[in-house]
Length: 406
Image (cartoon, rainbow, N blue to C red; front, side, top):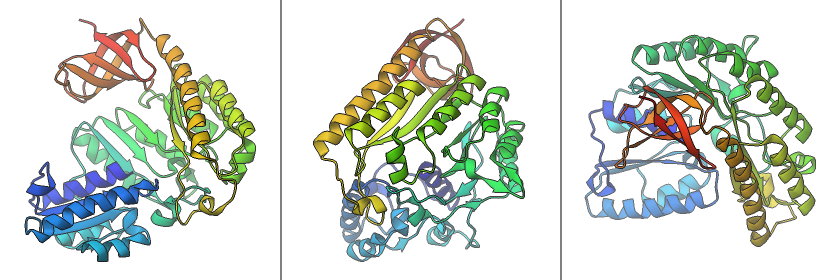
């Protein structure tokens, strides 16, 4: 979401006639778009703001805007006063940035279609904002608000414009993207409609409580949908899932994964896992390791618990020591990577149509993605957005290595 928000604001600023520069020292205006999920995010932002304040005092920098989740948090006013920030915006009012950079003022909207969203071989399309869940550890509902869904008509209109402009890969975005609803239609209805318009489609991030079996089956059945599912579980312990207010039990999650594996046998599965949440015992940790083994994740974002002011988890007992959290972090990560390595090695020798996402680096290696969602490194001069037929020659836990078939 933050990457998408940054891109939309960047395009708006370019439309206002500004040029992008690589260093703060060369800028007239700096827009600092922020994340608030991790505790050290505010510390990092303070570091950047300190540098920007020095540049403003020297006369080399004219204006600074703070946007994103921190802009919607209580700390934003303190930061504004301390660092002399010219404009502070949250996550719902980025339209105000238009006047800041000299564009005509836009009317307020929860899902602004900012100028310049077309172009490029891939694009994000936000279908909803906010979140109605209150997970114990998460600050997102506080800073992004409750869920607001875009209309199906608006979403499909944006997809059509993107595809007409040459976009070949559309990713549907939302804090809980599969919670999208409108007039009796559900997320799967929207996903199927988009898959009929765009050549390549994916979506993120999903919540297990909203994930319907028919959506999982659509991933396998629809040719234009990438066979990759990111479904955060957070813990394999029912006790911890209850403390976290996740709204499901581990067995229900396992059943969802069984449906996905049956619908898309070669597809890839990723998840989010938190270790060291207050109250987590060794038994809870073992339950998470068991779930990792059962689900055979292809990758996982494993986090050590980080308390956030304003969340329930920041004020409950049973704090897990950093030493124990680190040990559990390593154990979960090793379990995930072991499973992923075994699954990736099974792909050696396979011939895949690889979508090139990033062009070749200095070593001549491009980064691509298979239809099953595997990341691929391959030597090719093909441009981003094109397909290369390649044979997998080797594999690591995170990536396949392939050679183009000539």
